[in-house]
Amino acid sequence: MKNLLTLALTAIWASNSIFAAADIADGKVTFSIKAPKAAEVRLKGQWTKQDVVLTRGEDGLWSSGAIEVPAGVWEYSFQVDGLNVIDPQNTAIKPQRMPQKSILHIAANPPAPWDWQAGIPHGTVHTHVFHSKQLGVPREVVVYTPPGYEKGTEKLPLLVLQHGSGDNQRGWTEHGKAHWILDHLIAAGKAKPMIVMMLDGHPHGMVPRDDKAKRADSLTAFRNELFEDAMPLVEANYRVLPGQEHRAITGLSMGGWQSLTIGLNATDRFAYIGSFSGAADTEAVKACMDDSAGTNAKLKLLWIACGKDDFLLDRNHTLIAALKAANVKHEWHETAGDHSWPVWRGYLSEFLPRLFQ
Image (cartoon, rainbow, N blue to C red; front, side):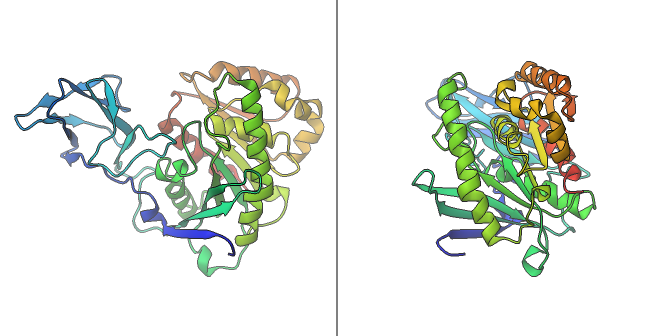
């Protein structure tokens, strides 16, 4: 692998977010932070809609007391006199362009697909730094290889898996636990072994959602880098099966928008397209609907999901209505949940077994 800075981590260590610094005992969690000059400290946890007001000790240590937290991978932060603060004792931080949340992972019993499971083979997470010809700067792509890849010779299909707005290319492994989900599904015989690549979806940094011109420029730059830099890099350095029938693309939120817009305009490249709480403007995918017969002949799966409490639900309804009117084959999954990682981990667990069958 020439001209690449490469780091390979075993899947267990690739995620630094197994446990938080919070005290966990008897199914309850105690959160604490030292802020001797603060007048008020609150805990904001993803598992509840109610803030927890912490109690100040004589030494300036604020504590929540023991509170019940259900099993899951949760985001949380402290509000110190109204200022958002990540947990300074916890190295598990949500991967974002501007980190704002700490991560607490409490495993279920029996383990959920996104929990670490002993006794099954685990894959490897690799990080590549490469020079982007499109942007003229160093960029990073994260690649998952399934258990046994290093000792094998078989070529494998490729999934492009994209994060959401504000997050980065490490989001799906460090917070989404995509590598553990795949390990679990492969071990259970529910998913095919595959290579997964995750690229930073912000080629020009954060772009306002209502700025159509900047969003279009960002999408074009991302698509060009994906097709001309990142995918060729992965295909050159890993045993990737050639051909459209061995390619899939999906993502959450912004990554779902990218996957739909890019994928439906490149059905010669991708046979499987997914979107988790994403949405595409119907005009941006009009070509695939105008040639619905050609689209249906090329696509093996178009899988779209969104939660009933998601703010993008209406936009998804608009897209689904257009796909139906154009007779483009697709699957629509309207589920419980909102615009959050607990929903997206579930979607990925459902989507992966449908690929490359």
